Image 1 (tube, rainbow, N blue to C red):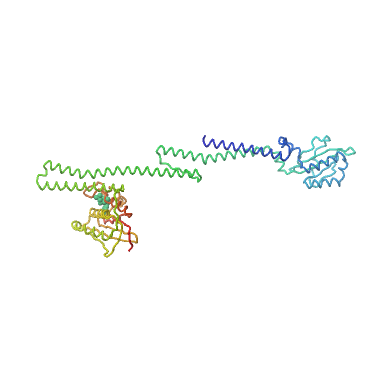
Image 2 (cartoon, rainbow, N blue to C red):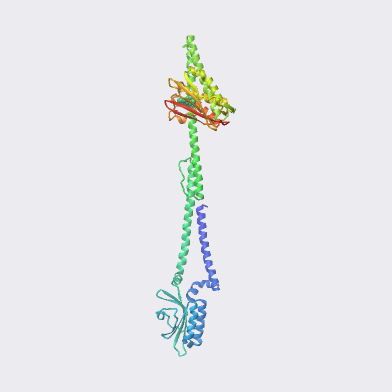
Length: 487
Ligand SMILES: Nc1ncnc2c1ncn2[C@@H]1O[C@H](COP(=O)(O)OP(=O)(O)OP(=O)(O)O)[C@@H](O)[C@H]1O
Ligand SMILES: [Mg+2]
């Protein structure tokens, strides 16, 4: 059964129950008030039309009726009539007595000059004792008894009570008012039902449609219901799930794209040296290297290409192992000043050969302790310095190594005056196999793994690596390591 039908049934049920309770309460109230089980049937007619006086008024009326039957002339005794009128006044009613066409007594309570004209005619059979009449906008209920004075003249005694016009209108319009009230209950129920269906069923429909979209693989929509209730929260959770799903799908697509690019780059980088090696071996086989010098040259080229290939495979292997976190790190206390000293010493000869000025901004007698894997850290520094050499385009070649410290970190800067890195390439240089030079010419750089490896190593040390560069003027590579002792 759908929620809509359940709601409809529960609202109809509530409507029927409220009506039944309403009728039951009214009947119980009537029975309790009148003490008669049959009275409910006559509730409206008897209570409101035939018995318009209260109990006290009624008992005074009965006394007067008794007097009219037994001692009618007493109903001309002004003193007695005033006494009765006084009693009636205390229950907000009044007395009126007439004899033929003239008035014997009129209570001051009424203050109604037209009263006499509106009173009912004589009816000595007293068929209708109780009734109501109105004068203008004022309503009266009365009990009347007609009798004969001892001299045979007709007389009437009235106990009259003014009723509120509102009460009278209510009495007259009682059936309509009841119908209107029942109508109001029905309308209120219908409105409530619509409100609940709108705020519950409609959003649920939307959620179901969205789930179907997701099932079909469409994640390019957004759910924007702005209710804050439980449905709103469910909707928010659903929307978050959709966003996460979309992000993960995009990530997967991006990964797929990267993987394709990776394979294409690796194939290219492997093919270049292999093609070269093949070419030179064919040259030897075809007898092109016909002199010992030529043969030497060819063999040297083949050897250097094989070395390149070996290096590339080595780097790829290291990178993939770092990426899978399968490389063990041997952390130990290292004095970074001594460590850089050793690195620079090692490189000095090569640098001199290449006419590169390698400046090490050493602070003597200073020991800066860090926790590091010596071998991996060396690899990082060498990769960065290798880049500084490879991307050098100035006459006066210059590499400057320096160290800055803070209370908890050591920052190593390796600065060169090479060609610099363009703004577009800057965010990508730490990506695997990324090279600013798109043609992947082996003469102008390696495979694009050097900085990716350095970045993995520094991340494993808990540090940070970044670059600053001015195209044409030079590049600074920075990396940080956590210190183990304070200055
Ligand atoms: N000091 C630098 N000056 C100018 N460009 C640089 C410098 N360092 C890195 N780059 C740019 O960043 C790219 C990525 O550097 P990375 O060291 O990762 O790769 P590579 O040097 O090309 O190859 P590999 O290091 O694997 O031999 C380089 O191709 C180069 O375009
Ligand atoms: Mg490099």
